[in-house]
Structure formats: structure tokens, C-alpha cells
Length: 286
Image 1 (cartoon, rainbow, N blue to C red):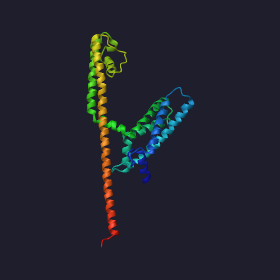
Image 2: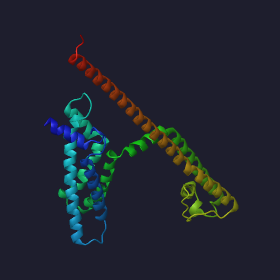
Image 3: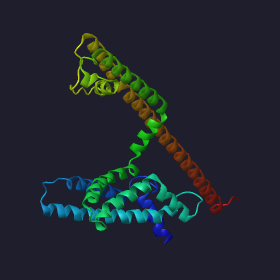
């Protein structure tokens, strides 16, 4: 049983396999997740024929069984996770982890049609099935790198968001003062003007609200130009942090390779020493 559990652990938990790559099992699970998300999305199309709808429901139930077996296998194999805690404590830690909770939500939402006939509940559950795509989090090292990059620059991003908030409030206040009496529906209050400020600052510009006075257009131009710079700031911050994270990852790989080569050199030296000792034993001196 111990060998089976270890094999399941190596197959299911990303990074547990000796080569660190995705195993065949995980690759198949990625395919199942893609198919499950596609089936959940198609099931919301009202023009599908009953035959196709029934086929999609059956397919989703099959995916639910697969996710259930995967979830149970992960709980069982979690006992082989690194650490000094007992097997059941490790399993409980996995169940309470974010990935474990996501797995549980996906399993429950996919199998819910087996235990309920409530139409409103089924419609809600059908939408929850799309959350299966969140299971990709465990398969992507890139997502972890992106999250690490965002965490490293959290202070810079907070400052950027604070600046955006100041500009939003400034734009809304300026348009309220200059356009409030002329266009009360769009700019009659600061909260109303905030809608225009948001779509202008984010460079979306729906056009459903626009200033008509010269001063209002000046303020609108300032907000619009500020939006171009402001949208680029978080992108640049995250891109720089991501580049640094990738460089650290490359440096780490180089260091690991260097250490591996050093160990190989030590092994070679030990082998050569043993061979020399065997040669001396085979050909003793006079």
C-alpha cells in the first residue's frame, strides 16, 4: 500500500515526480478539465437539441466521477507530502488548503444533479462547473511566478491604485462642478460623474456621457491623458517584476546544475580512487 500511495503522490502532485515535470496522469487531467469546462459552457446554450443536452449532462457526470476519484486519490496520497506530521494531519491540511477546497467545490458542483431536482439550483450549479478551470492553478508554474511577481511589487501596485483613485475622484468632481447643472443625469452628482470618470480613465470611453463646455472638455482631456499613463504603469511594474522572477529562476537552475556537476566530479574522483586502489591490490609492489 505504501508503494501505491507513493506512486499516486508522484503522479498527482505537481513537483513530486523526480524529474519535476507534468506526469502523464496530470496531462490527462488537464485534458479532462478542458473538456469539462467546454461541456459546462455548451450546456448553457438554449438552442441545443435535447439529444445533445442529455449527452452533455452525461459527459459532465462522467467528469464529476473523474474529479471525485482524483480528489479521493489526492487525499489518500497527501500522506506522502514532505513534513514530520502524521498521515491524517497531512491529509487534513490538504483538504483545508485552497487547492483542496477548489477540488471539493468542483466535485460537489459537478455531481449535484444526482442529488437535487431543483431547477434554480441546477442552473447555479451549471455555472459553478466552469470553476473547474481553476484547477489549472496546480499545473502551471507560470501562474506561481506571476503571483510571486505581483506579491513582490504589492507596494508599488497599491500606490498606483491609490493614484488611480485620486484621479477618478478629481475627474468626477471637476465634471460635477463644470457640467452638473447642464447635464444633471450624467454629472448631477459626484457618484454619477464617477461612471464617466472610470470609463474615461480606463480609456474605454463608451460615449454615453461627454462634457459640452470648454472647461469640462479641458478636464476630460486631462483625465483621458492621465488614464493612458496610468494604465501603462501597473503593466510595466508587473512586467519588470516578472522579468526579475524569471531571471531568479534561471539563476537557480544554473546553480542547481553547477551543484549537480560538482557532485558528479566528486563521484568521479571517488570512482577513480577505488579503481586505483583495486589496481594496487591486483598488482602489489615488490
